[in-house]
Length: 70
Image (cartoon, rainbow, N blue to C red; front, side, top):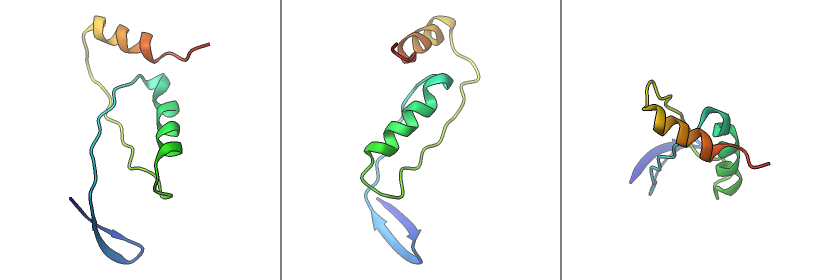
């Protein structure tokens, strides 16, 4: 449940937190797609937390599977 201020009114509603992992290269493409699919005209709250460190094997996997398909 979320309590928020919007259009000069106090509101309540159900919200979901979703964590998506992607590469820096694919980040903007992913954000654009989320905004395209989101039902609220104001868009989603989309924030990023950069990864300071990850095992090379995992980082390579993320890069491989988030690369743009040609």
